[in-house]
Structure formats: structure tokens, C-alpha cells
Length: 239
Image (tube, rainbow, N blue to C red; front, side, top):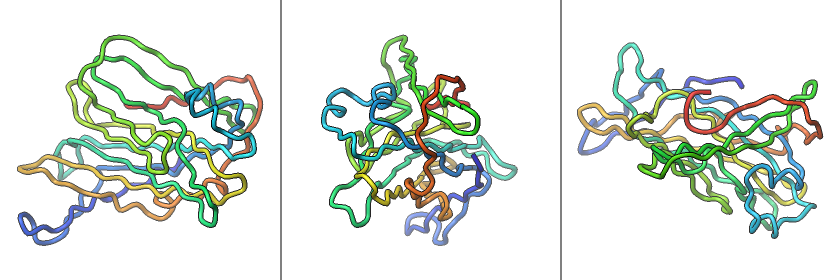
């Protein structure tokens, strides 16, 4: 995945700075990884039985994944990240149905849950096929990742600073998308982040077009069948 260094734009406000500020060298976002799926693969990728029962084998299914890297500091800025919101607007221009998110990774996480959702990529020669595995341990405490919008066209994540789980390092975000067959499926990505200096700075990432508007159908690798192994872990933490 090719990574892009992205500026965080802090807008001017009447109560704070009267000019726009750009926070540089604190956020990287990779170009997306997109692959097609078959309907029979979806149960292994965390799609719930209730959602599966309503799906059609004639529709198109994709995995969309990308990495957000939050640098703990730069040469001239050491303000810690307090939270980050990643939102995705799924659409299919010209279709009478909207694409929806069928599964999200990472799912909602809490400080002592130990639960993770892992996408594995099977690599036969030059193509890759996703699969999934779960691990559970511990009890729920403070949430530091909140996934939302499953079953809708507006999925996303909230990453929050929590003891032992700072908003720092690499976060691999992935979702399973269901869409009308043959539709031009579009994903518009928004990344916002808050940093703490003397006050809270709320910013929005200035994503270039290659990161902001993603054509899933055009970028998707074909779905393949293979039992070869290879892993791409997803969820909060280092990749």
C-alpha cells in the first residue's frame, strides 16, 4: 500500500485562531486495497447470519482496506492525538440501491476486552483472498474503538485515547461492502482528528482525490479460490 503524508487542517474560529492552521507530518493514509468477494466467503468475514439471509448471489461484494498512521510527534509538534473519526459515504450513482457496509474491522473494542477481528489475505501467486479470524479474552471496559454504521451506507470508526491504547501508530481499517451488481461503487472517505495543546484542536485531513474518492469496482482485484496462507491483520494497533 502506497502511503501519503496528509495535512490536518484546523479551521479558523472566532474563539481561537482567526487564520487556518495546517498540522503537518502527523498523519499518513495509504491508498486503498480493494478486492472482490464471493457470497460464500462472507460468513468467514464476520457478516452476521441476519444480514446474510437478505443478500443476493447476484450482487457484488468487496473488501475495502486502508491504513491510517498517527505519528506521536513531529520535529515541531508534540501535541497528542485525543481522538480520530473516520467516516465513509458509500454510493452507487445511477443505481436504485445504495451499497452498504456488511462488516467492519476493527469492531468496537474496549481496554480490557482483548477482542480482535483479523483479516487474513491468502496469496496464490499475485492475487489475494481475504479470510478472517477472531480472538476473545477479558471483560469489557472503556471503549477505545467504536465501529458504527454496519448495514448502512455511512459506516465509520471513532478512535479514542484510552489507558494503554493511545491514538498512535498504524490502524488498519477494513470493511466488507455489498453493492448492486454491475454498479459503479464509490466510497468517499473523511478523516478528522483532535489534538490537545493548550486547548483542543479539531482538524480535518486534506485528503487528495486518490484517498478521498475510491472507485471500488474499478480498483477491485478479482475474487479467487485458494487455501494458501498469508495474513494482513486488521484493527487497532501496530501493523
